Length: 250
Image (cartoon, rainbow, N blue to C red; front, side):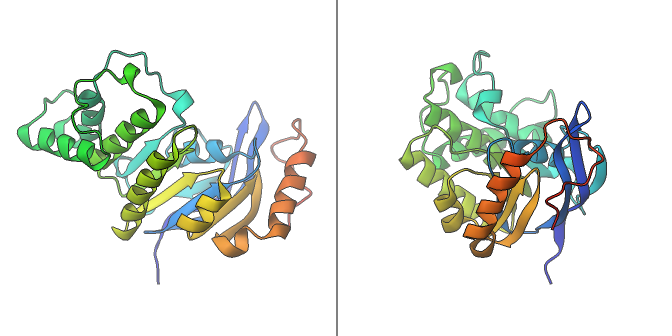
């Protein structure tokens, strides 16, 4: 039987006492590729930030099993990353080796070789000295994936990783995601493209601040569940108390 890597127990997350995620329970199974989908404002990014410890819980708990905080690799939305910092591509990628080099350690020949291999894996050979501010959106996302490759994390959490990048880059990065799955890593990705989800992610959590459905993608993305998610999102009371049980609970 598959061991649950990350288990949610009645998780609630609120901003200023108003719920962004409400009473969510379930498990992200070890070695599975799971998409998190739902309408805009459904709490998807809020939930993944809580998974990596960036947001506190208002209620419930998250059991990360045998995973330590350092076992997580996290890629936030591109809009949250400041590219104005004067950093070269190689330096950005080397940040993924912090567990190996330490906070103030220098690059060894081994880590430098790994960084070059990671850049090659994302087709950025020769970009080592390029400032990150000069990269296109797709090139920058490739560099961030190279940093994740350096990190060698067991659980990888991606928040809208394919937004505003070209189709060729998306296809290549999806190949890397699939490879992570074949290596037994747990991948959780916030996505909007349901065709991508159906093709590449066998498990899906459909969220509308509450859990609408969670399980095999084919059944989770049924027409009835998608309609329910939209209706829940449109009817949600932004001023609801965090302790209220949502009326849509099934």
